[in-house]
Image (cartoon, rainbow over all chains, first blue to last red; front, side, top):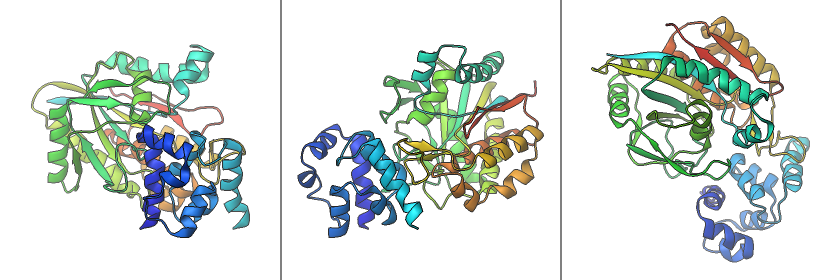
Length: 89
Length: 275
């Protein structure tokens, strides 16, 4: 069920400008009220999009995090981490 | 009785409006959209039915339809901010949408219904190029092309046939065009993107094969080949081909006026007319 919440956080970055700004300013606080496992929460805060994809988050939605430069992600970092799932698999 | 005057298929790449702005009317993207638009203008549709896959913007996993019909007089677009297009209100053809919904249910398709919704770039980008004044009312028919399990290709073809029947049962004279929006092979933000990029094309061979099947009207082969595995192999939005397949269901097994793959892209532009 908490993969749903990872997806919901990504969705909200597109559709809720205030949430997007909050996630940029203070990620830990912005996602504090979401029910996530400790692993999911840490992966999210670390911008570990490859790990989140492996947990079942929708990759199209994860892309929003890089598009808005959230959680320390750039296009380069995002693609490196996302592409790594295939080489490690 | 309503008449289906034309069906077309196009991509909806979010940055194409700004690309064409930058590169001018002679660039390939501008030329291909224009070729489609000229056919559409020649048949002067009064309504556009558009098969579209929402990109988790109109709908989300709290309520995710496999098939849905949108019937509303006013439709806000875009609801995502990933194209350079300004927000506007599109006209919806509520009554034809209601007929497609009702008749679709009647013919065995358990369609979802939305009477209050917005749409993302996957509807707005095609309209931007095909009906720039956006004065033709639309009926969006949404097909899940992004979140597996996707509906089967044959089921989507049959949905197209049901939509055709519903349109043809419209009692008054009405000229209807059908638009399919989407790619055949595309990965957006998934593991098969190009290094440092936001997208990639995992299966160019598949794209070429689809274009060839469309050109030759080898529809049964295409339906056999468009499996869940093949769509997944074609990318995380590879299911957008289902919009084209539903469009084929509307027009039957006809050959296109033209279908052309864009250079080095996993998508194509096509037009079917029989007037």
